[in-house]
View 1 (cartoon, rainbow, N blue to C red):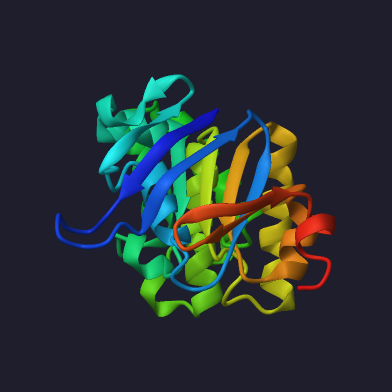
View 2 (cartoon, rainbow, N blue to C red):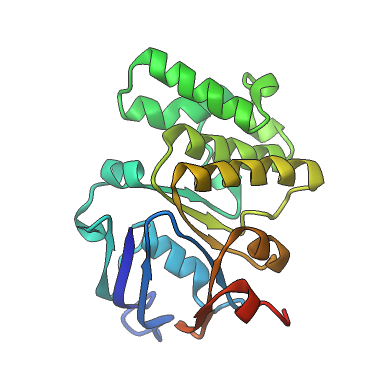
Length: 227
C-alpha cells in the first residue's frame, strides 16, 4: 500500500536534514503506530506520506503510484489525513456541509452524498449537531467532525497525527469504534501516537523514529514493554 524508499527531507537547502535515508513499507490492511521523541521527524514523515511535502531525495509510492505524480484530487481518493488540530482542516460553517464536502468535490450523486454523509455523522456521534457550526463545538466534537469527513470519503490509506488527544472517555470510545470499523473494512492506517496504551490496543506494528531515522520496528510487546 505504502512504500517509502530512501527519502531525505530538509526545510531548506542550508538546513540540516530532519529525515535521513528513511525507508518504510506498509502492507495493505496493516495498522502501524509511529512513536518517538518530539523532533524525531514523525509529523514531517506523515506530511510526506500525505503528499503535502516533497522529499529532498527518494520516492514515496501509494498503491504502486508515485506520490509526486498524483494531483491533489487523486491523492484525496487514496489518502485521508487527521491533523493534531482539527480546526486547521475545517472549511465550512455547518457540520453536515463539512462532512459532505469531499464527496461533492468528487461529483458523487446527490443520493450517495446524503447517504454517506448521514452514515458518517451517525457513526461519529454527530447526527444531532449536523446543522451546528463546527467551531462552536467543543474540541472533541470538532475532532470528530474531521473524522466523519474521513469516514464519508473512505480512502484506503488513513494517516492520523496524535489521534487520541482531546478526547474524554466518552468520545475516545466513539473514536475507537470508528477506528475498529476502518480496520475491519480493510483500510491501511498509520498513526503518530504518544499514547502508548492506545497504541498497544490498536496497532500490531510499532515503528520508532529517532533523529530522522527508523531505530526500531516491531510489535508493541517488543517496543512498548517498558514505555
